[in-house]
Length: 136
Image (cartoon, rainbow, N blue to C red; front, side, top):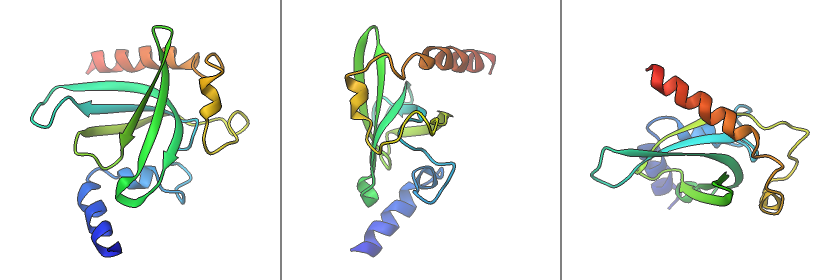
């Protein structure tokens, strides 16, 4: 069974996603990282949607690895959970690394109760990303 799981991960890991979420990678995604995710809107569609948020949880379970992002959209807290090896996931991009002094937990669920603590920097990063897209 482990061999089958390993083969599925190799097949789904076309752009190096597993290295981003590896515990051994010092430059990988950690809880507290600001992440931009681009997804396809449907299985046969070419249109995409983007979501930027703070990674509040990572669940590493082989092919079922998933991560949760949280952001404040129009003054309402929004959480999205993404499966890492989903074919609908187009790209995962790290926008900002976490500050080691700021987040010291593996799961940052307490940010649900403190909405202003970490989400202020996201607006500037989002505007910067949109400007870079417009230049291309």
